Image (cartoon, one colour):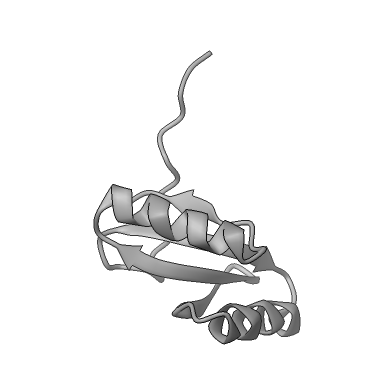
Length: 86
């Protein structure tokens, strides 16, 4: 089995670092609901849109270890974060 490299962040996120994507939606309303939920839980989440998709992400986090810690905190709050590499 080959190991795939982490997905690259899209052009809407130009800062170098890791992002934790909480969701991607075709509906801006659904994305904003998740964005509000993440912010209410104390996370600095942001919304971006590209190609008709609305993405809710936390980051960037420069250090991989800190990104993994943040991923664990998000999971503990009931989110399903996907780690995206720099």
